Length: 152
Ligand SMILES: [Fe+2]
Ligand SMILES: [Fe+2]
Image (cartoon, rainbow, N blue to C red; front, top):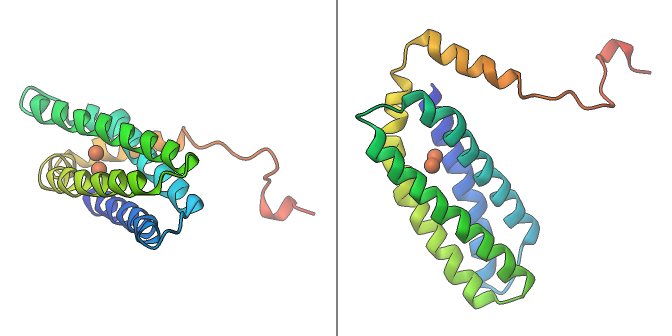
């Protein structure tokens, strides 16, 4: 189940990035599309490094996780580079870096799906429930929100 959710997240990030990349091919810079992809990807990396990796980190997985963290650094740098290339309107370089990002992600995502996500999936149910539950602690209720029945 968790594995499926994470794979769905990979898929939606890939769609967002590909949409942006397709636009670049015809000289269209979909800045909003890039911002969506960037947010999705950064959230995904944040969650992996803060929740997933610590949950499955041990002597056996250490080397692999170090490699995946190295990939994340490269991905993050590419996002930063693409963002400033958009601002400078350097579309050819932007296209090249986006192509590189898509390629890095293809391999990175495949590696995770074949290794660490399976390890995560095989954790005891109680541990997985605790992890999901800890996500609720991070949710903030918007200031203006109240229960349906109390709204005017
Ligand atoms: Fe990752
Ligand atoms: Fe991932």
